[in-house]
Length: 63
Image (cartoon, rainbow, N blue to C red):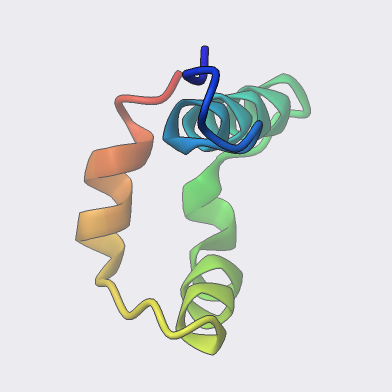
């Protein structure tokens, strides 16, 4: 949970949302890797430039 003085959308909440989205993809028979180009493009459009390997490393620890 987020600390009382933090925004409701603190780091823990964002991590939980990312985990939920990863699980939803898995339940739908998909994976983040199947959408890597879209993910990388979206991240870059938000000023966040990562390699797929960097994202894959983080995503594998979410589920």
